[in-house]
Image (tube, rainbow, N blue to C red; front, side):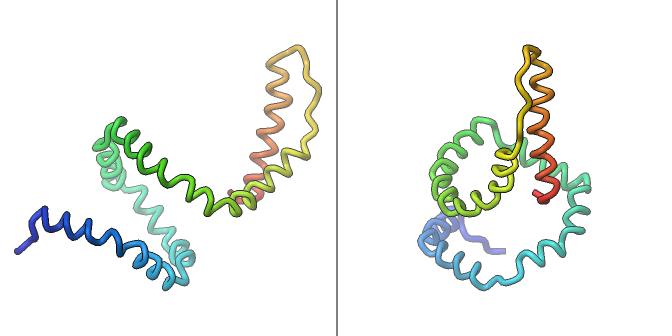
Length: 140
């Protein structure tokens, strides 16, 4: 079987970088039922995630990346993308957080006591319980 050289493949990859964003956007624009298809595939996803060979393949992939390599990539690539991602999703973040913000604002905390453990149980515990209940109620 004829296969292009590594240099030719790398050149083709690098040459495509200018075209990829628009081609990606065009492909996304053609999709109308991603959520339905993803939900329909939930059973298969669960099945696959229980297979030992899938879990082993995941572990092997994780083992193949050093902590330093991950930190470098996350620092370089992640840092360059995070602000634009945050900007693009600022409205969604506000909408998604609002039920929790409102829940926090509605909590009447009991008075502090001189007992640190009681304060954690009575105050922090109350906050954790209310936020957990809100999460369960909202499905997030």
